Image (tube, rainbow, N blue to C red; front, side):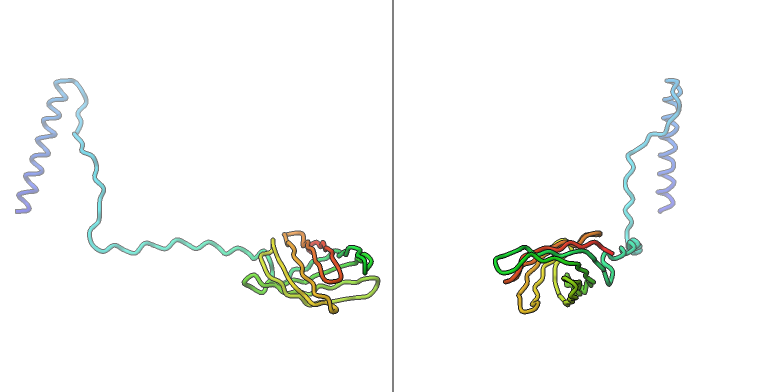
Length: 166
């Protein structure tokens, strides 16, 4: 029965083409086959799993295991202490989840100092606290590809620092 339907469909198609050719010849137009809008093919049944898109290459970290900075620090004069300044360096480590640790070191009038400090936040808005020589310091800063700048204050001093990446 399927063969009969196929033959009928073929005969109908041939008849439509023949009528179209005859009609077009009498009007002296090129022969054409009537067309119907193309319907989208929708597959039935299970389909193969789509191939996963390739994952992009991971970016190299902007902050390597150790970032070194070098510059200066400066405190403002107040009623109890004179203005101070000196050389400052920092070896900073991003430990993960917005946590950092590092060593701030340098000199003041020939006297060397070194403090291990922890801080947190994204590079553009880091904050920290530290107890240095009995003074409670609070500080905030910003790290870019080239600079590490910040301000600090304690019950003794208010100041700032500015360092360049080494």
